[in-house]
Image (cartoon, rainbow, N blue to C red; front, side, top):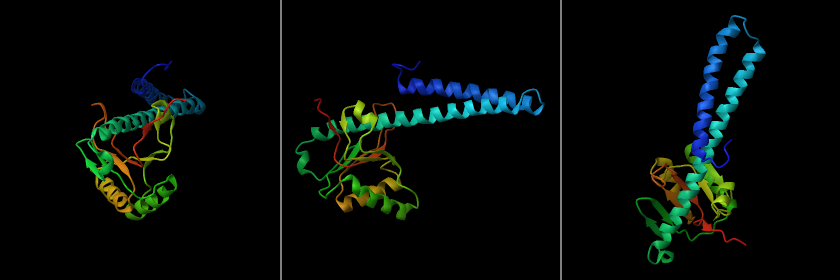
Length: 200
């Protein structure tokens, strides 16, 4: 049914379906209370509604993953357009903040970042993409040694995380604005910019 459809279109369809099922549950609850239908029938409707809501949430996550990966692709092009970019340790534009950290970085180092964030804010680091994902595969981006964090760089938590990364010499790119005028895509990409994968 959804072959060839965009994630946004799929999400709208699933939202409509979840709304329809919610209305059915509302209608069926009084019928159950009056004994016109069985508990099994009502619970079947409720399970369908819960399943539809879960599908909506999964689709929203997929949409945000695409937005973030698209932001990375656009930012890579913006970074490399800057003159003598490799010699610059730091770059800030209206759309992104780039820190060309000189320290060693590997995926194993994310544990140190997670420990810092938990100790500072009392919650887990909101990782939205760890290493290579299906979305990065589809967009032909090499994300194997990078982690995306769902924080806006202008928010207090984002500012604190970037300060920590700069102090540790860890490279990052922070995206602060809309992607192609459609949605936020705001996040902090820890690691070097995602290069295009070369087809074999």
